[in-house]
Image (cartoon, rainbow, N blue to C red; front, side, top):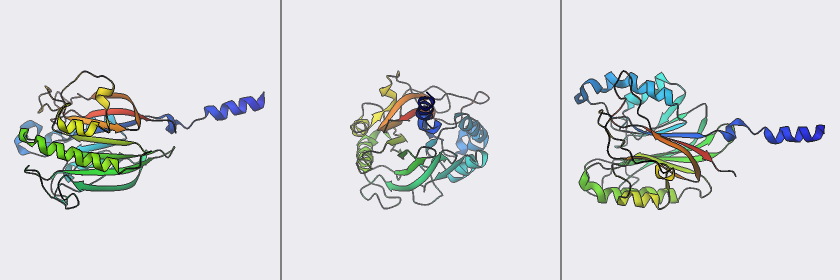
Length: 274
């Protein structure tokens, strides 16, 4: 009897980390613009940081991030570290910065590439749109259970006429994902400036699962221009090899104002049993 109870205790003593969800957030934080009036960065930084802390995601893919914004976030919430170059290969422009919880994840590898015909050339532009577009990625190991995954974070061209460029960008991202270890989960985050059903969306979801549609959530908008009224769902969390438990667009305000002109999208994921 004692032997049976000991065995039962051993089998039930699965580390909490092995059962814990993986919370992933994609968040276009809006670059610092003095034209934003009451929503300029210096006025809303505390708002964004308060919402960020409340959510406490394990890993975050950001868009439009400037270094001073990143530094303010990690100074206020030292649970996080971040990495990434800006879209011109330095640190003076927009970053696709990736943040991760140092108390939960270990960064194993990181890198970047550009969404162009010359992806290894920093700042390179192809396909007729005006700004460099890029990917920042990181491979992580979860502390406690050793489960590994790769996060791929991006921001696609924004103009209506950039549909063909977004399709090519999506194909470039999909090709990169296809090179990653087959047995290891992948999460793709980003502001894709496009909607479900578009060519870019089809290129990505041929090999990835949209966390939103997987749970049959009603379509909502994610870009709202600081108004709270959004029509198009352009911010996505796409996955490979993970179970999707929940997903939501976070609509929190602080003092009645929003932390950014996009709603952050948070997906709660679980690793599949080995």
